[in-house]
Image (tube, rainbow, N blue to C red):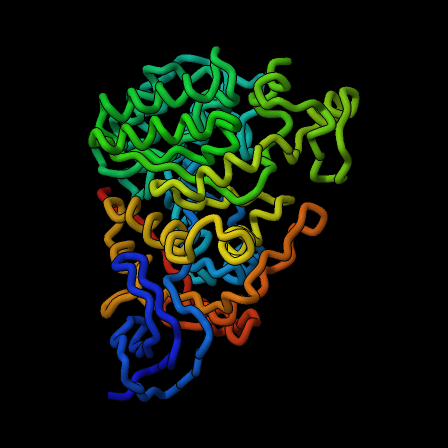
Length: 458
């Protein structure tokens, strides 16, 4: 048999079966047709000796959905990217804007925050202004539920929550939205109600709310960026999550491999003076992305009126390490403009934490960035059942990288530098990165990225 494309002599890593051996892979029509110890023949044959070939990485938490950031993502080995925390309030429009235009696969959640913003007539924004009705009002639950259910009926991949940004959302409102997620068999991706290690209104109290929601509704849950929310009590939060899973709860969590968070300075995260105590930082731990300046009380007050993204240097590295070493965590970059996690998160895990420091094994790192994210999305879309693994019949979303040279290059000063050591990336069997370079497609060539979407019921 002659294959469309053959990779010869690569180190194949399949996290679904813990397979790790030298094999050749044959691809036909965008699907893996053969994994063999024998030499295969193809129209195109590439020798990838000394390189690793693994499933393309799947990022379930990205807010950077533009062509510029899709290019950076595929140069970081990502083949599917999702906006599942904030989400959107118009599923059809979100998908239509990307149809036949996107290098990598893409998907979105119906967002509790955008639904609130629509119901309360908030102008378009990443998150609502801290003093707006969308952030603070406690009524109109039925209208919010209606928006979320319509999004689910239009094929949303999840229900996204940013409860901390909308303090007016009552606990009962969140219960009702979790019930909808369970009804449509999709996961709830949750930015919890509080952050910090303090006992009162801290991250553990917020996690207990989420665990209660899971127990009562039996909805699947993914807790967003646990390390940047729980900080020095991340280990205790992980212990609670492990116990919940042992007792039958369908719950996971995610992290990104950096010690700085990123958010909007005019959001409800900074609505009172307690944020410094809760995060264990002061103004000089904040950097205003638009200017690159470290803040003080005066500049903080000025930019809070103007709005804009800030970097928040608050995460202890041990929290990152605890997440890396947990079997129930997946890597979600939480990509935002101005933060290196938008360009280099996968390569940083593989280069810094696997090769240089040996914090986790290569197999576990690949599992966190491919199989685990695919598995939490399989109930929403059968398209994910053939991704996140390498086997005959799987979709040829593949990352081929050099384990000795892979590294993140993006920094806080230069956050858009692409990663190094990613040699080839395939999306649906087509190259988007080849020989370490982004593939430039002419205007008449349809990019290979596909919509990953749930069942459309209306």
